[in-house]
Image (cartoon, rainbow over all chains, first blue to last red; front, side, top):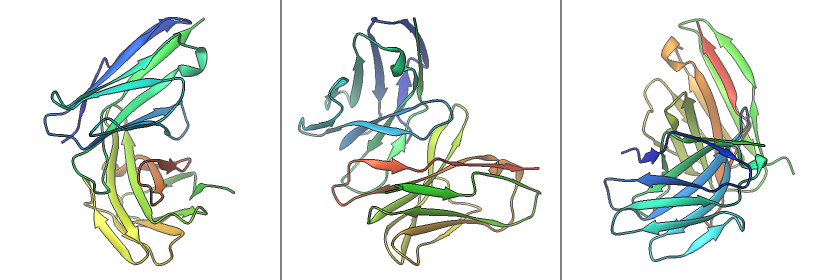
Length: 110
Length: 112
C-alpha cells in the first residue's frame, strides 16, 4: 500500500525551513528518502531503519516514529539546490521491494 | 564508471507494437528494478530481480515481461504496447547492503 506524503507541494524562500511527512497504515521496517530534480533520476538521500539506525545525507535530517508509522524529513536553512520532488519509499519487511509515495514538490526561491 | 545506463532515452510506439528496454549496471549489484513514473503517482515497481536468472513481480506487472540473463543487464519487454503504458521508465540497481538504489536516467515512452 502506497505511503501518503504531505504536503503535496511547498514553496520556500532561501534560508527557510521545511518539513515533509510520510505516513503508512501498516507497520514499517524502514523508510527511504529520495530527491528527484526536474528531468533527472531520483537520488538517494537517507534511510531510517526500525530501531533508530540512520544512514545518509549530512545536511538533511529525518525522524522515524515507529509507533505512528510516520517519518518526517527536515530541510533546514534551505538552499536553491534543494528544489525538486521528494519521495519517501517504505518497506514492510527486510525484503527487496520499496513502495513509493506520490511525492512532495519543493520549490526554493531566492 | 557509468553507473546505471538505459537504452533508449526516448521512444514512440504505435498501439500493438512491441519493444525492449535495456538497463545495464557496472557496479556488480545483485538487485535490479524496473519502475514506471506517472504524474502524481510517484514511482511504481513493475518487476525486480534479486540475482542473475531470477525475476519477481512488483506492484504493476501486467503487460510487461522481464529477463535477467546476465548479472549486469535487466531487460523490460512490452509485447503489445497500449496507450496506458505511456510513461517514464526508470531502472535501478542496489548492492548487497540493500539500502540505496541507484537509478538510471530514464526512458520516456509514448504509445499512440
